[in-house]
Length: 186
Image (cartoon, rainbow, N blue to C red; front, side, top):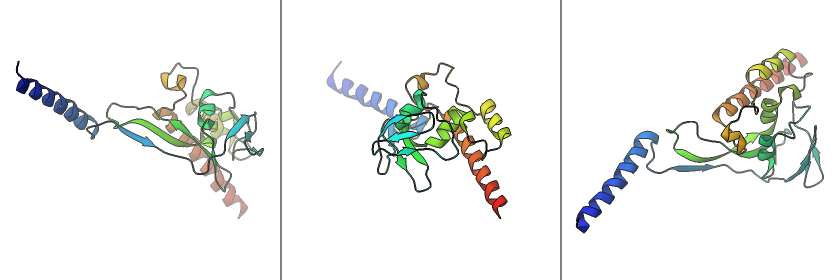
């Protein structure tokens, strides 16, 4: 085999792999999507009700009365610190695993609302004086992130697409409860 044949085979292999990736994912190369936190504050420890921050501040999360402080997913979310917003909500960072081979983002680190994550991990830790108990029961039964199933993503401290869907269901209940409380106050 001469060098021209080898060169053509190499070019053909590269085009085949690149073309296949482009057809399947829309991108010829695997992509990265990395979100960041604004002014992150380190979390030095967690209790059943509070996040203890590096500056000594003890923080609670809106709508949450009991944190899933011993959950490996919750610990993964606060590992790189948290961003605290003016409304008291807090965000952490977590890896989101691919849900499909057609996803062009192979490495995907996303911001997660810690209240949504806490509510999805432990719906019984949601404040029953704000969110209706029937809504909490629904979240517990249908939208809870179940760590008892052995999922490779959870073992690595990563989220799945299904976890994000469950977290958005928790967010919907929080927003609905806030609207009801606002309507009752008028």
